[in-house]
Image (tube, rainbow, N blue to C red; front, side, top):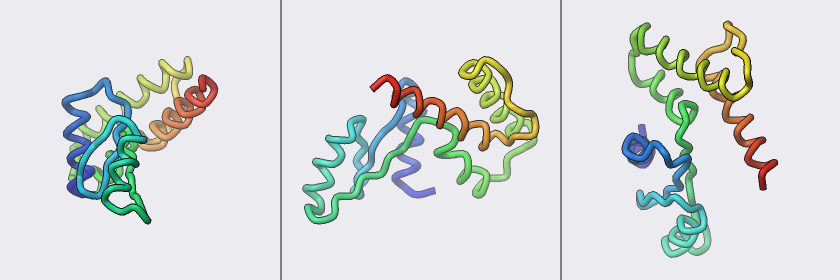
Length: 119
């Protein structure tokens, strides 16, 4: 896992209420994209780079599966959490054959859609 990604994950562990952070190439995290972009311009005015990390399973679960050997119990816990969140959001359970990662992608898409409707 990249150092910046690990830093974002650690941040979310301490700040569960924050939904997303934006990182610059020097490793600083910002809760506002504009602040991150302004800082990135100081680092490289011609090519400011900002990376977004959301506080969801999707942003971290893929790399976790690749890097760590999770137990069956841990995999079930991840899926149970995703199913519960999906059920709360949609009002019904997802198809059983979907993986936790696929369920989380559907949740993220629905939240993004809702966010766009509210703006």
